Amino acid sequence: MKCLICHSDKISIIGTVETSGHYEVARCKACHFVFTLPRPTPEELIAHYSADYFTNSSREAGYVDYYLVGEMNMKAMWSSFKDYAKLKDEDKKTILDVGCASGAFLAEAEHDGWKTKGIELSEDAVGRAKSAYRLDVMQGDIFDERLEAGAFDVVTMWHVLEHTIDPMEVLQRAHDLLTPTGLLFIELPNWNSLGRLIKGTKWKQLVPPAHLNFFVRESMRYALQHSGFEVIRCSTQHIVGFDVLKSRSPKPIVPLLSGFEAAVVTTGCGGYLRALARKKMEGSSLE
Image (cartoon, rainbow, N blue to C red; front, side, top):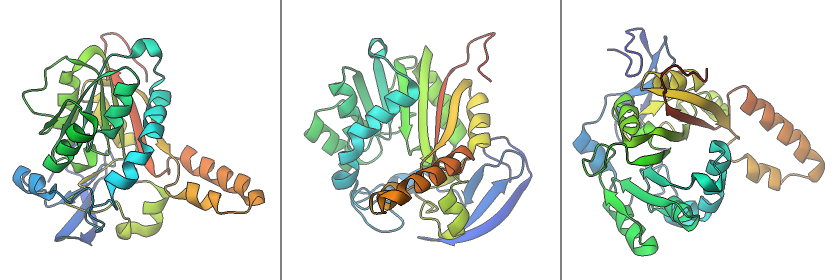
């Protein structure tokens, strides 16, 4: 058994988890990538994204009701993405959202003047994207031949890479789809998050076969750099659920909670891991 990211054979089993089956949790000692075993087949993975995936409240699904809850947050997500990528009005070009779900994020991008395209495994979600937002969204995955190489200025993956069978192949395909100066944006659960460190294998994000791959800052940088990218920034984001806690806390306590959260994020233990990268240009380095 070798690491899917760096191909090291220094792999250790660090735990087990029971969801729809019995899974082992493996960790690479070289690059710190974490993944679950056994790996699903492509057919098993597609079958997992049934019509109720985005509306099922089970632990395995990982969502309460994406259509009702997630879509309400998309305006904030679009704004957060633009801030993280430091995009300006003149940067409005073409964007591909991989695993676009119902397309709400792309709808915000289109409203902001971008030319958009989405691809999504779930037939139900694709139907909603077309009916609710009239978006150009296809059912399929990032390897779909209908996606043209070099056609996109930006590729986004919101909580997608953790679902994939071979994350390095996905990153390399994203590289192929981008223009020579294109940007890749990724957000996914952070293995070093405070929640995971506290809850261990009871962490709500550890739900194979939905979530198969887990990164920390070091393994994410390694994966991007070995897929033809330069890493512009890679950081962790807030403590999941902390906004609710702060909103319900007495005002004198809020600054203390905010300071604690800032310290957690700075040390790489925020709930989500984000990365922004661009195609590697000859003779350049951002490291």
